[in-house]
Length: 489
Image (cartoon, rainbow, N blue to C red; front, side):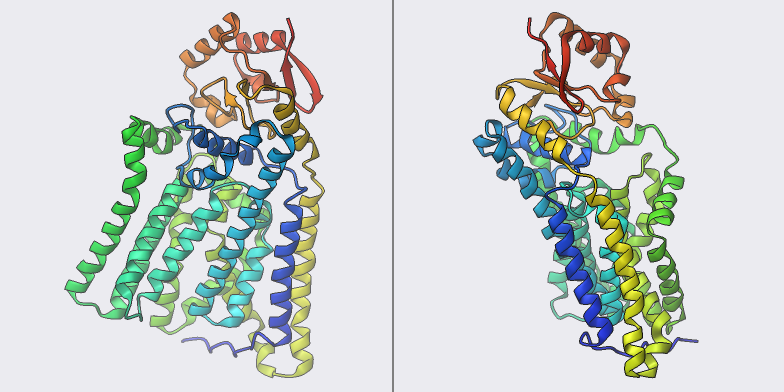
């Protein structure tokens, strides 16, 4: 039997007002912390890759990389400023500015989450979905960072929304076209977005089924999506083909990543969700029950639009090393279910329509606010002053044409790498061939490889003993974190 509809609430109700104020306040707070919060090593990885592209280097061929590169190409024009390699202030400003791009993308993610949830269930559910998204620890940790995941997620949500809008739109051909373009751009931004394709296919099937489309229109819609995807991908693939790097692109993004050392991906994925975002998971469970309790057409439609979440959750563990940002790709879909579940949980109180009850509904929102603010405060306590000091040292104390050897500590940027493998976290060290290590050792010995600075962190210390001994012998601490400089003869 279908559940009763949740009584409608105006955004001007006490609950709606508090949810909107909470969301805006969280965005402002996250934006404010972007200037002072510590950097994730991933951020300097993406920063350095984009700068290398701006400097004319070819990803996968000139240096090792294992992410699809659209995000890096998008931000690379910002990094072509010559002042970045000589002016420490300019370098610092650019790093913070790139974080602001993450903030802007995150606002877009919240807006699209609201639109999809409102279309599926209503305003109140949409407001709760946005509030749950912005209060998630995964969102708080990753939304403002310099990384491709926000852009990939934004594009996935655009693809989902336009696909859903095709159901009742006279502009359905344009909807399918935009959906195909957006999904392809999402994959070219982050290859893990490919896991959403089975879910988007289910959304497509639900759209054409509810349209009662003719066989001709179905074939036309399929042709539009496939053509849009192929045409969208061609320029980037041609770029790599013309630089004799297409094989490297495929190998680095899909084949090598599959060889990474496994780290209990299923267990880690569940640990991240259950440990960090159990609140969303609880309300998402209620939301799933509410969807299943609706009339069959409504139930099928809601689940079909949210199908990208189910396909990503099902297939994400095929990646050997699951990280927080992987969960970010699924978060808005999960939060939409959570918004539906939250609205269902408070439905008996909303139905009473008494002023005192309306204000009582503010209490759980305030509790959510306290929870979210405590998470932000914890992140805010980790300052980035040492990272920026490291960056300033590299820019001001090394020559622009010098090389560097990075490991997995943020801070070094805007210098070309001395080693093909820019970063040395365990998954990358696992795939570095012995001949690459031998070549590095030989270069260090005869001084053809002589970086001005190196990151002597725990990952660097896991390199083969011959290489580590040469580094310990030829470089010394600067007194700034893990940054070491080349000894003067």
